[in-house]
Image 1 (tube, rainbow over the protein chains, first blue to last red):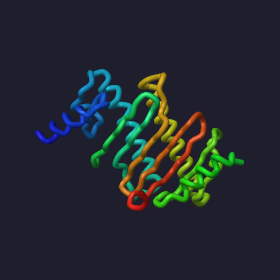
Image 2: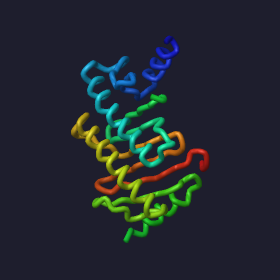
Image 3: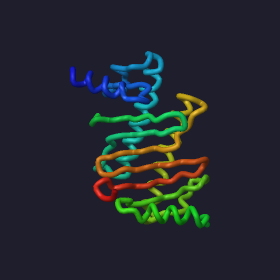
Length: 85
Length: 100
């Protein structure tokens, strides 16, 4: 558990990182550096999007799977690591 | 018919080592350029157009003034980049083990 905490701290301390959210398998935020309503909003929308992305990948190749999703936008960049879940 | 500049750029990317395919899709959702076979082109176009549309919806929900410009889908086998500007989008499929 300490290793997870250290990793989260390290990521959050990188210059430019606005927020970090950890979601469980159900898409519920279990750790976050952002306020509750923002965390819940991001978690909900990005969990769904990640599931859709995974579906797209599997549709093209059932033997393949999603490992990482990065969305670059005009204002910032969102990175989603699926870590096998 | 693509502009000469655009065509040169696309050919350059397609020729890069590790790049499996490049598809350019117009505002009507029709692939206008691809170096993959027809079936794969349509399959990728349809699937990633849907995913891109969903991504844009998510971005607008989070911030109405914002929008996605690049979607980077990393999988176990490869990497699919979907780049968008106005109504066109470009899909590039990269194999991570080859290339620079």
